[in-house]
Amino acid sequence: MTSAPPIGGILETAVYVDDLERAHAFYAGTLGLERMVAGERLFAYRAAPAETLLVFLRGATAEDVATPGGMVPGHHSAGPSHFAFKIAAADVARWRAYLRAKEVAIISEVRWPAGGTSLYFRDPDGNVLELACPGLWPNFT
Image (cartoon, rainbow, N blue to C red; front, side):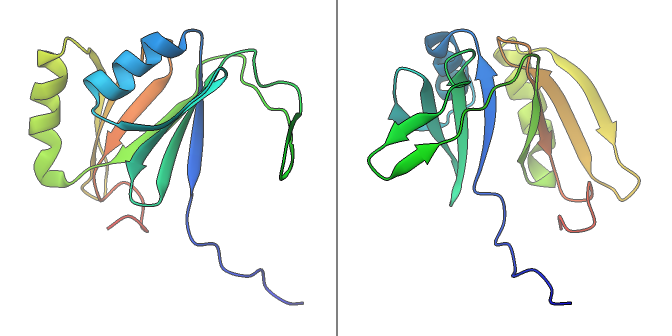
């Protein structure tokens, strides 16, 4: 049996929100992400080199969408989702202080057995975001 070709990483991840402008105020204004695309049903943000956060308007993506290049299959999420941003271990305290200064409640802080730390908080739509430093997963060093 042949093995699968290699995967180069995760290019994009998605979160679903009820109000794109409110989400933009949070993702661009609070977290400092650069918006690359602004549309009626989604905003796309530069999360890191070659990594994109897609912020979709909840309920606007369930149907397939025809594009000049082909069909984008419909997708959706009914409840809060979760994703994590990578941060340096040296920046955990700075992020903790920054979030508090921006009045973003840290709902949990986890110290992982391998030495990493994660800070968890919510966006305005209740999605759970995580700032994680190396030591969370064996492949994140």
